[in-house]
Length: 140
Image (cartoon, rainbow, N blue to C red; front, side, top):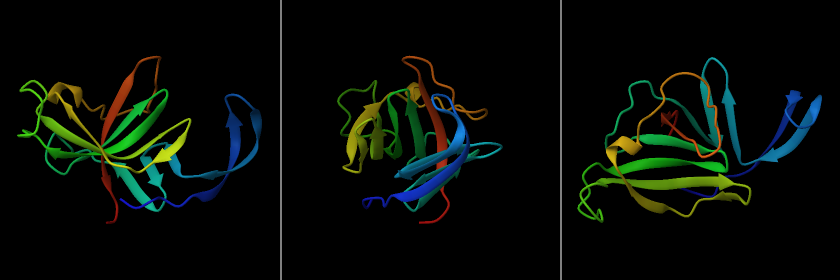
């Protein structure tokens, strides 16, 4: 993945911390939750994949209170896995948090049960929660 460009975003609405107003900022990652989930990382656009599953090439959105990532399932039964209990090879392509965005690929090995995607409803995070959703790019 290439380094995402930031875009200028203007939001008219209510902030949980600042109240009602017009908010202008530069954004590298934009996540809109409404009837549909829309995610922009630079110019890359992703939407919810209702037919997604643990399969090679599947993209996932990983959200935690401290940040998130767009990851891709590289292999479901990876020969590089450190043990048989973590056979799914995941490559985080975009990661973000308080420090900004990072596009250096990071590989991890997960259990199949770790990729238990939440298919419906908005992303709501509590302390220590991880929410995973299957997503797909709208253009490549």
